[in-house]
Length: 340
Image (cartoon, rainbow, N blue to C red; front, side):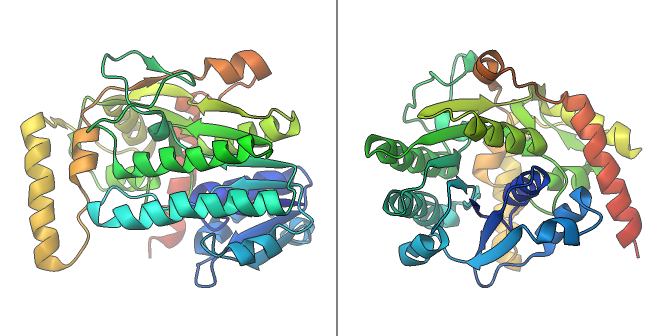
């Protein structure tokens, strides 16, 4: 039995589907009020005959802040894939991220120890590795340093990792993966999926920032593979390539048949943008689409290396060109189906 936390989310849903494809029995965790809309959409991309795989899928209501519920959920399981997390770059969500991402992960670790789980696979983030100011490639050996460049989300994931490594010291077998910006088909109005929607709506702006990207299917497959190979107490960076934001958005525009962005965002424009959207947010009560963290991060150039997993396991990432083309195909099909 494989348990997946955060199964209703973007990555969690893809992970559940990959496990089902490989014939595993999956216990998917959800909070009592979580919507299954995104999961059902992602599930439909993998399977045409639901009955053939739903027999291996069971849903279990459990909040990762409730350790008693986790202990029941983990009963008789062999592996726990911990994908549940709050991802936000809004300052007001800091406390929520610290509670869910850090305390919630501590609860998952403790429940794994209590239930004698064979292995915990933790989905972390490249954000938890910290930043390299000199533009050098960041890898598994990069040491975390306190810096104003670290977002609240990054800090929460770093602290969550400390709980996972604490579990390893107490005898739990763990493997940690640090994916880059995860791209794939999902709910098109949030996360990285929203970038495809923004290009579709002819967003005119782009930045010269560079970041590491990875296909969501690669993240799921690599994590499952590491567990299957029984690789323990190690971390692996998962990045399919380092792309300038300009190239990424131009590629999306090309695949969607849209005009590419034409206005390069300068530093002063980014600073003005997050202040303006913050003011509009106060006036309208709606969350701003640009925050101080996202505005400043969009201008930075970060490079990541996935050489370790490729060298040690032979894992090969999908080319990002292929991934974007594949994702845009799903976006167009979704848009055509829901255009009315």
